[in-house]
Image 1 (cartoon, helix red, strand yellow):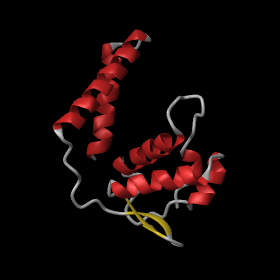
Image 2 (cartoon, rainbow, N blue to C red):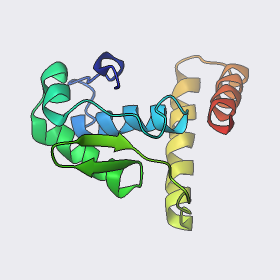
Image 3 (cartoon, rainbow, N blue to C red):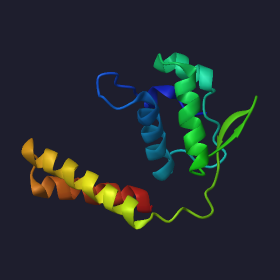
Length: 131
């Protein structure tokens, strides 16, 4: 079962809590730190540990299930499943990701992170998701 403290909610970030939960879990899923068959904490347990409403956690689980990451069964909780066929992103979505990444890189540069440092981080991240 996933240890909840690995997911952190920053109420001051401006990013909705449901998105923060999804993003945190998605990182673990893509990096293989949550293997198929792993049982996630119950909606209520995770909500209590994060100090948020249970509907927020339930919505995050539902959206991850819609993406093909989780199997949801009432009374059994959320189980990580193997995604046999990852979805193919459409052109518009790929462009959106590219623009968001460009904005993040620009922000990193404006805060003094060198181009070499950013490139090294991107290579390390790419390496983590291809293993």
